[in-house]
Length: 402
Image (cartoon, rainbow, N blue to C red; front, top):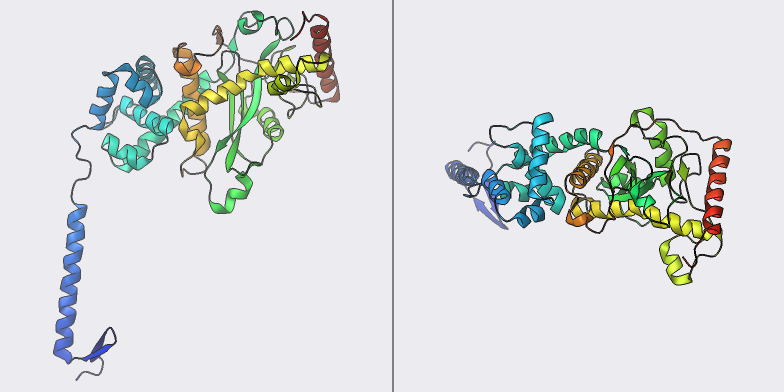
């Protein structure tokens, strides 16, 4: 016997003694069995997976030419708005490919962000590989971010904005207000070793997003990517001091409304600290007492426009309420793309269901605000004096119970 060849193998706890011929025969049979199993697995892999008769192109065609409510429910916008957006993307940013049209690429993106669908679910729905779905998702996301550079910006309204001018609670006290700024937390996904930096005060892993909006309920500035542990004022300072961000500073003698977590400098008007501010505080405690509380009450009521914008954004795009396991660098782009869709829909369709409770406003033309900031003590004092003057005049001219 060959001393280099084992003369037995174990079957459980029983020693079965074999000679050389038996051992080689057993090994040969085992190899044949393994080869047969591999062939069987390869045969399964060769079975076509996406074989539905309703292809992605046919599905999109059926949605766009079917009941109008279906397009709104699936793609989160009306049919005319969807077609108009696809035309804009095709004309400026992306083109049809051999297998996927711009409309189908946009439908893939809208279905995923609107309903928080996974890539595999979208692959089955559109009958493409997950690689094709991911590639087209990224392509549309980048195109929307580029489109956002032209539609996420300030807009001109001649004179005082109608939303302020037509409401005696706000006019003439806030006639120089151009919008509101606030932060919101968007749920994020990050690896376990980085979660402490992204876990906010409520224990939720998130990114802190600071946005500015006007009274048309359109975003004029979006700044994403900061960890959830970072407070709003830190993100705000970074947003307005980095030249590459091109933050739209309010024109001279004008200002944004901000909450008490933001600084009081020229161009940014916060409420009085230490006084009742939120609307629910007044519902439970009666009418405002004194000029500071009256100012805070009306300030809070007017600044709610940014909260309504965030509410519409998160209600329309469910992906923002539970971010899938995308790369950390990709998640801010998803937020920017959703804000771009928000603005495009608002501009294209004034009667959109998510905005139907918004006050009547008039859209203006695009405007370029100057980019400068002043954090000096004199700037803070001037803004505080402006706030006192507004509050005192508001109190002196109150018609009665507010």
